[in-house]
Length: 165
Image 1 (cartoon, rainbow, N blue to C red):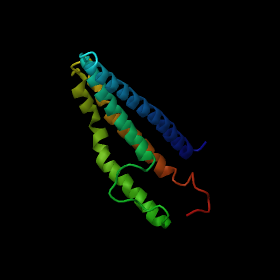
Image 2 (cartoon, one colour):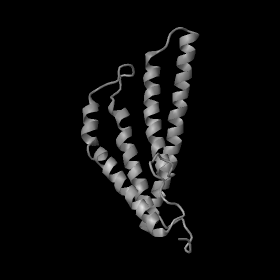
Image 3 (cartoon, rainbow, N blue to C red):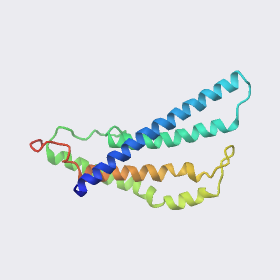
Image 4 (spheres, rainbow, N blue to C red):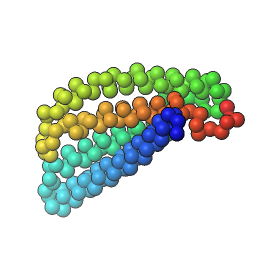
């Protein structure tokens, strides 16, 4: 197996993991919200940890879903890059997108160690866990997006037949 195929394979595996995990977090969020509604209107007593847990499920699910959207080229953008255009314009658009991702997400990943260190000693009010476990979703999602970006850059010709431009 070539290095290009290994990188693309890792990206695919991470994508499957993120798809499953995002769906699981959103399902857990749904269960927690339904439990909150039932507890509020039927039992008139809501455990305080359910709102907090649902919020953290939303954070993890949303950021993992963003990685899936990035890999599928379904993430929000101002201009849609050319799809069936000349190869030069398509490659230029890919590299411009890569540059934008590195410019905007690079500092997030670079400073994430200090961001996580600041949240290590803070605990959540209801669950009593370190907020670092919630904040870890940000650098994890950025690292996965960088992995997908690398796979797009090195493996851009792998999925296409040889004669296609």
